[in-house]
Image (cartoon, helix red, strand yellow):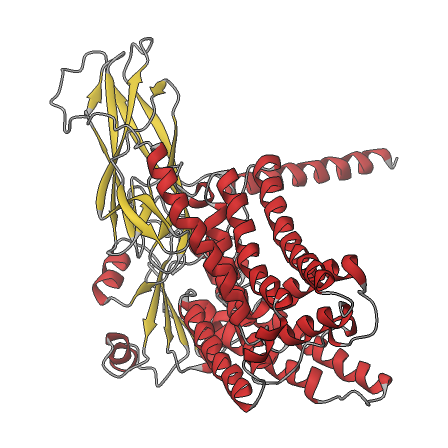
Length: 611
């Protein structure tokens, strides 16, 4: 008698399961692709060559890019760093697309790669030729999906962008031949680098690499170590000048082995993995820029004497390990590692340039850097009398180190300013906590501090750094697709409401600490970002930093709010706007966004990129 109940239960369960799957599939239906997109630095639109096509007729799409001043796309795959050139892919049933026709690139000197590259800037058009199928013998429409990928760059940073556009092509066997809206240009051939140009590049590059290597020996980190190392080698070679020279050359060999390891890494990456370890590429990522800024802060603390790097006893003392030629070679390798932190920027720039060259030239250039660094050691070990002419350590050296510390802080500030605005405050707060913890690590203990106390203090410092990282840095780059905040514009808001589009206004200010909390706890949540993008909500960043800003006046006179932070959701169905004046309203905002309908955007603007 219980079997019917079991069957009913199973049937209800299966029905509920399939209904849930159907609802989930409905929620995940792809949104229509727009025919144009506009963000803060670029707008893209599509134009068809012919309004209606006949079967077998050739046509083309003209994809027009309008870039903000001082921004560009990389135009050539051969010169673009990290293969970040502009790429366009099309997909359409029944249409046969040919290779895109890109405009001729402009010459541009890229500071990150130290090379002259081909770029496209200002207003330019890429043409996508195609041909309609011969077999289509009735009226129909073909959907074309267009995916655009590439790095949009300025002089100081790049943003990796992905755009999805689309259009519909009408096909009618009886359509009259209409007038073409544009004429396809001729394809341009890429410029080839001649052997003479390559030779000229090498003649300039190799001396510069040698000078870069020499410059590694004039950094504050190197000067205290240099006399110690030289005297150590000389003390081992009291038997004869010949042995002194041999030990000196062995020491130089150790330096060269360090740079040979870098050259080998470059060869392995390029031949084994088809990539290069290029600093210029990494500077295009906000996470790397933030990490470099924090590294500059730590190095500045080192220059200020906040902490010290202990030189191994095998280098600093006359007794110990490292005796003989093999020991001198190992000491040279270790000295190269110890001397590079203070000269990080010089070494990174020289190494980045070398990696962008042909493999043989890159290998030779890296080794020439090492040769430049090793040469002074070879000269000083062969002519010990020159040691007396070196500047003696003193107060001037400490002052010079501290001056370099301020320079490093200036570099850190500059790196933070080129981060996206939403990331700057987080990196600054984390830098403050990191500096405090570095002070704890070294300043709260001494050589004579009990081991247990030392471990407890340093463990607390590490935990504080980790907690600060989770609070200020974790999740700073959303994976659900960023919110594109438009600047406050009353006309834009009014137009969106007239089009039955919801509007989210975030009133904020640069000096508002609570606004940063709202940004972190509400607008960095993945489900909030996803709903704003899916429901085509117009996101407005109303900046009230100064009294003269339009949003400041609107906050008081239009929305009757006393101060920030305030978030207001204007709804298109005449409901009362929702307002949040606190900092913990993410769940309420999420529930309200879920009630909004999905809107067919058509050719409306679809935000895809964060500011």
